[in-house]
Image (tube, rainbow, N blue to C red; front, side, top):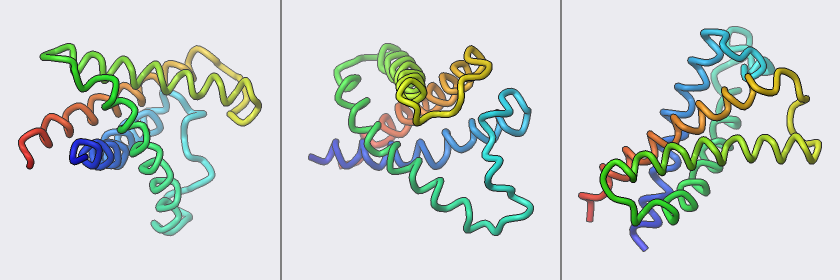
Length: 140
């Protein structure tokens, strides 16, 4: 039971730190302008406008943390990190593809760049999740 709580917390922390950092870097460097959060202008809106979006991403990260933990918990050594990173990157791309196919996602423009950006953000989240879970292994 404690491992599930640790996975939830690791997913939230990875979303709040690693995912937000990757999204900021992609937006700041203009590598994928469609990934930006243009509807929230940091100079025009108060800081509180970011909280609902970050809260939603953290909630999704918590659920993703439970799923990823179930799939990688038996991995050892470098396979643990590789599995977490690759699984998270592929899962993020699959979610975007399915949402776009259903009609709920963003319009399909520059499809390859979009998938690359989402895969990078997913991989960074996976790295953060595995690092947090490794840190939590020593906790009771």
